[in-house]
Image 1 (cartoon, one colour):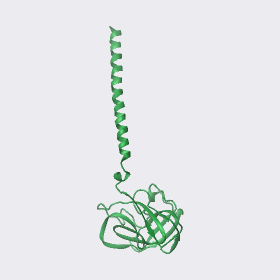
Image 2 (cartoon, rainbow, N blue to C red; image 1 turned 135 degrees about the vertical axis):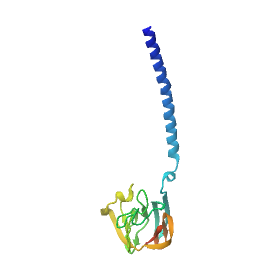
Image 3 (cartoon, rainbow, N blue to C red; image 1 turned 180 degrees about the vertical axis):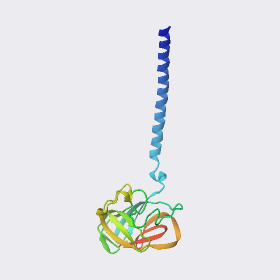
Amino acid sequence: MKKLNLLMLAVFAAGTMLFFGCGAEKTTETTESEETSMEEKPAEESRPSPLRTLEGTAGNSKLMIQYGAPSVKGRVIWGDLVPYNEVWRTGANESTYVDFSSDVTVEGNLLPAGRYSLFTIPKASGKWTVIFNSEWDLEHGHFQYKEENDVLRVESTPEWENESQEQLSIAIESPGIVVRWEKLKLPIVIQ
């Protein structure tokens, strides 16, 4: 009788393991297909600050700019979310970068052709510092910034507008590159 009970218990345990084992495989298959469908979605849909890429011409150079475009969302931007007197990645997420097809002058200073990260140092008053840095592919923007990799630092005068712009934009327009966000308009002269 004992042997029969042990045999029945062993058969029951094996059947239970087989049943639950099959269910686990189905769960794994579902998870894999869910992961696959998530990978097929464009990265921009899941980003709170959409990735923007634009091309244009400034001076005699073709430009390509890529940046993350954050929104104001009711926050205080200047002096709070973006502190004064500290390096800012001039966008969101990874560093903003600019690619110049030929040499240009930026605010009257020579910048060789190439790809650069774009940083700024906002000020409560007066001119802002605009930085072109040789390390353009930084995953976390200004958190990985190293001053020793600066290729060019120039000054640009911000303008403050009456209308507020919800989402940051960087445009290739006269006088070169123009950064707009909240009430800021920062023109960077490129020839």
